[in-house]
Image 1 (cartoon, rainbow, N blue to C red):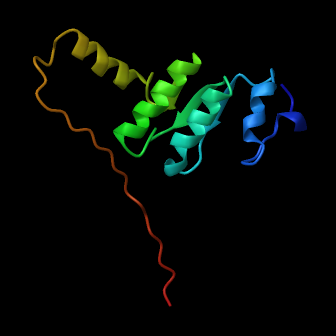
Image 2 (image 1 turned 180 degrees about the vertical axis):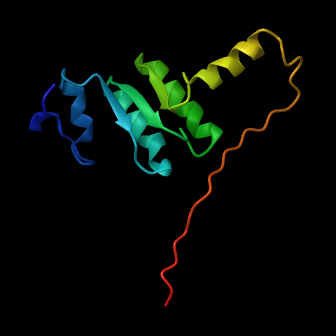
Image 3 (image 1 turned 90 degrees about the vertical axis):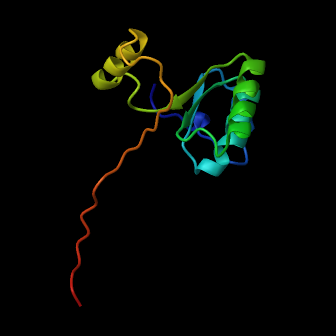
Length: 121
């Protein structure tokens, strides 16, 4: 669908999306602390919500977001890019096959190296 001004919203007129049949879903990519209220607004508008990670700042807010989407009968998806990457799918397959035995504890972490350039001075 080509860009149409009628499909552009801001914080003030955001709730008017409920009246726009061209919009099926809203991708919430604002700062983490805003996800909770915005996903609930999306659900109340009757639109599916895609929420960037982390979904919420705590479990209580996350559950409220889930409950709001269930109540509105809309889908809630966390925008996490690795769901279907081959290595992720392989770990899921291994877990489902019982290859790990009884899991007692799991810790996931990720990191990256940043190259910081110093221009002297």
